[in-house]
Image 1 (tube, rainbow, N blue to C red):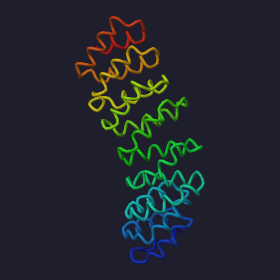
Image 2 (image 1 turned 90 degrees about the vertical axis):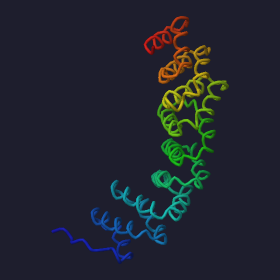
Image 3 (image 1 turned 90 degrees about the horizontal axis):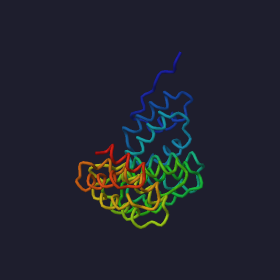
Image 4 (image 1 turned 180 degrees about the vertical axis):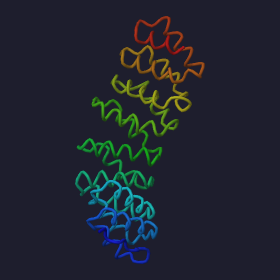
Length: 256
């Protein structure tokens, strides 16, 4: 027979104790009650239990509980990033991404080059979720990763900023010495697409004539997402007729 559920509404100590109950449904029930109470004094202990919680749904509920006391939760998450194991750091970064507190940018940014790629990707994602424009140059400086998983994660993270990131990405497309950086910049602009990336159309048009084929192709694909804008259509029309790169010609013709 299942153990009857206890009401935790007016008994925070009992609710905290229930967060280590072997029955995950009991832990979930206690977590919901604590979330309704939203007591910042309980946040440090709830955070400790979050780092240890084995069940995904209970972890998500505990994360929600902590978002109800954001300042205390941010302190708890920040304090374990340098001392916790990988799973704890991942969970702490997940919580910080949910809190979206600009005051945590500095601590999160300290992990975007973590030796564990999962932590680095999560930190970059958290920065994108926090959406403080001050981190855009930090992320753009890390364009061009040769590991495809890390590259895709950075593309996703930067694209979350949309139009505010476009000028910095466009500068990387125009000025970076490494062609992998230029190609990656064009990829991100492609992912942002219309209307956010339309101001990058001139930089993308210039990149159609880049000396590296990957950059030329990436720029063509990005301009294909901007064909509602005359500058993008004109650039594609020109290279569809004149480019020596067969991939660029083909994509350009299919885009018009």
